[in-house]
Length: 358
Image (tube, rainbow, N blue to C red; front, side, top):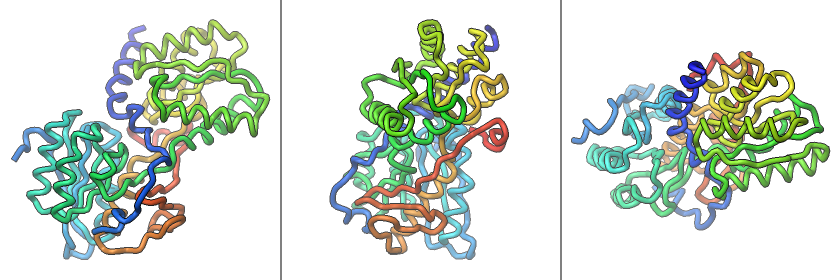
C-alpha cells in the first residue's frame, strides 16, 4: 500500500499538467482564416533560456510560454522548440510560470511584450483571462500562436494542435484490440463526465467500435474527476461488477496508472488490461507489472516544435494553404481556417517507454 500511495501522489502532481483540458481541442473551431496569415516579474517565473539561430544572425526572438514550466511534460519540449526556431533563423526563449498562476503568467506575457519579441507561442491554463494581454501583443504587431491548451480565439492568430483529439479514440481502440482481441466487454474511465470534449471522444470510440468491431461491448462509462485515487476505486468497482470484463480504457492521460494498480490489487494480471491514454512515466510501472501492454499519447516536443514552426512561418510570410499544407518537418500537417494540426501520435510500449521522460 505504501508503494501505491507513492504512485498516486506522483500521479496527482502530473495530473495538473495533463488535465483534461490539455486534450480539449476539437475540430469545431472555425471561421475567418485571415488572422492566421497576419503577421521585471522574474520572481514569478522559472528561469528562462534562449537559443541562437544556426545562421549566427537572428531574425528576432520567439517566446514560448508555458503555464507549468516545471512539469516534465513542458520541460521535454524545450530542445525541439529551440531547434525549430534555430532552423527558421529565430532565437527562442522557453519559459513560463513554475506552477499554475494566471496573474503571474499574464505578467510574464507583459514582460515578453516589453522585450519586443516577434512572436508569442502560448500554452495557457486559463483561456480567457490572458486574452486582454494577448490582444495587446497582437495590437503591437506580435504574432500570437496558442498550443497545448487553446486560448480565446480573438486573442491569437492561430492554434497549433496535434489533431482533432476526438480522433485520438481511434488509435486507443486499435491498441485495445491488439491486446484483447476484437470481441468481449470493456469499460471506459473518463475525466469529468460532463466535459463535452471528453464525451465527444467517447462518442467517437463507440461509433468506431460499432463500425469496425461490433463484438466489442462497452459495459460501463465512469468518471474519475481528475482524481487518481477515485480512478483506482472506480476501476476496482468495475472489476467487481463485471466478472467477464477484458479491458478498462482510460480516456485521460492520468488514468492508466490507477487502473493498472487496481488490476494488480485484484489479482487480475493477464485477465484484464488497462489501456487508453497515458504519459510514459505513468505507464512504466503498469507495463512492468503486465497490467498494460500499450498506451497512446503524443510527443510534447514535436508539438512545441510545430507551434514554433507555425509562428516562424507567419513571421516570414510562408504560404500555408487550407487543407493539407505540408509544413516543413510536418508532412501530414493540415489547416482548417485558423487551426493547424500535424497529426502525429505516439504509442508507448514496454520496449520504447524508457526513451521518454514526461
